[in-house]
Length: 326
Ligand SMILES: Nc1ncnc2c1ncn2[C@@H]1O[C@H](COP(=O)(O)OP(=O)(O)OP(=O)(O)O)[C@@H](O)[C@H]1O
Ligand code: SF4
Ligand SMILES: [Mg+2]
Figure (spheres, rainbow, N blue to C red):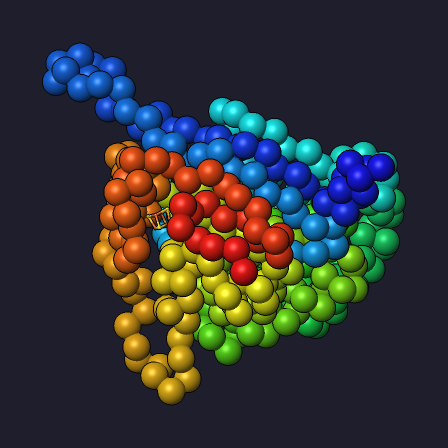
């Protein structure tokens, strides 16, 4: 009974996911220069659940593996290990995830009129029968994302960054998805435009009951969007919990560090680089807890032993030897 309820409330359950890239030099160079094969573990033993009709965000500094997780979930990459279980959608078949990318310009065909860009998934998936029905649907989608019918006749370059992201959202919605993976969908936009696009995405989530796996390096953006947040560091989740709990009382030293980088209205020019030094190379991850070289409270145990993921009494999951329960 419990297992069934769990399945019903998670759109996606990811368990012990691993993705390794072979970044070795070409074979001949390796032989001549006697270099070993080099493997980069971009995603190391990651588990999370995306709540059905809700939003889980992945957050962390550049290179921590967020986009790799997005690509695994959308099937663009095959995992080297672990499992992904999608709940059944409205049609009874397992949900599949549709991706919205950071750079809307790169993902929109520059030579196509916007109405054809949006119509493509409708035609491809045969979601409408006649040309008139497809046209009507395109008009409806343009309105849904706050664009006008006449915008359909224009080309992508005639729009601003925010409008282009609205076009890619309309295109994603055209396939009638139930689950969207949004990889930094607003990080290329100005702050004011960012807020408009995020508000649109929240409205669409309510209107269509969408499930989001949302990705950002920006804690203030994920706070606005998420029911739950998973903080990633060097390919692992170090803390995962309910959004307000995480903001009210971050338990992991890395989460605490990240929260210090949120822009502050009183100090808008504060240095936003995360303190405590650079992220180590994922080619040579530190021993023990991968965060130990930057951790202000690390002990000898931290450099020797990888912390297990523990679940605290409030449901937060954490990977730290020293983090205490409430
Ligand atoms: N196709 C690939 N081949 C080799 N290495 C890769 C590949 N894709 C990602 N990586 C490496 O895997 C690690 C994780 O990269 P990923 O793009 O998932 O990080 P990210 O968290 O999305 O970063 P960003 O915030 O910069 O987008 C990085 O070290 C990256 O260099
Ligand atoms: S395990 Fe140790 S090094 Fe890692 S975050 Fe916790 S205290 Fe810091
Ligand atoms: Mg990325």
